[in-house]
Image (cartoon, rainbow, N blue to C red):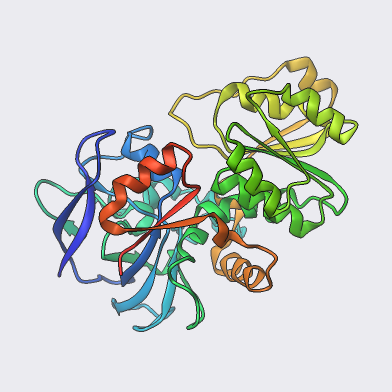
Length: 365
């Protein structure tokens, strides 16, 4: 079938809307009519080739839509089902069998190789078009997904906002709810009040953290953080962040979440921890970005640093949980979203990079 998709043909250059040919779904595959797709920082990073996924390429990995058709062997969904698209996993390796699909041993092959695991692609146009990004490439009017990365949602789900649950919102919230799991009354600081950081902040409020601190350089984002549950905010450009966190908490934060992937900021996040505190690293930077901490400070206080992918989430369980928390008014992630027409994808990316928009969501329909 003919579809419209946003193609990256050169590193760090604008997306180009093109007419492409999309194959029918093969065995185990699902054709989804995409209603919306969030733009994640990872999409922009790969467009800029921070991670060298082959070009030309169709990105997008926070899709939401309706199942149009299914290939042979698919039993999880049927045409007409509403779905959120997320990351793919093999469900056969050691990590998947342990119930940790975010650390699937085939994660790279199934999500960022630029093709199916066998090297083929479902998209065709001028040149060899690469796709299957996170097993979806949802920056298009239709996408081919697989059973492992499709999450069926209720018929009344709002397809205009649920897409970001597939990655960015899931990553921030899941880091707190699944990995850190802070006890009620503890303190948590988030470095970077973007979509991932604010999702972590809202999750900290859900868990009962009593001191929730947001650090950012943009005052408007810090104001929103307060509206979403931050008890304190710090502008990192005008304040000694570590000293201020120690003043607020009395001893340092029990938990820190870094979403920036900026080496000096990560060091601040670790230094701001209380003894035995834990810092979760979520940020996506260029290949070769290092973590640097003071060794004595790290060892003598027994601090911990953990890397977290996709919020340690099992999407089929976790995405419905987030939707329910949203319905209860306890996780108002919709306040992060600004909608854009698909044709305005480059404006949406520019606004995101400039800090004007926290979570841009493209509306294909």
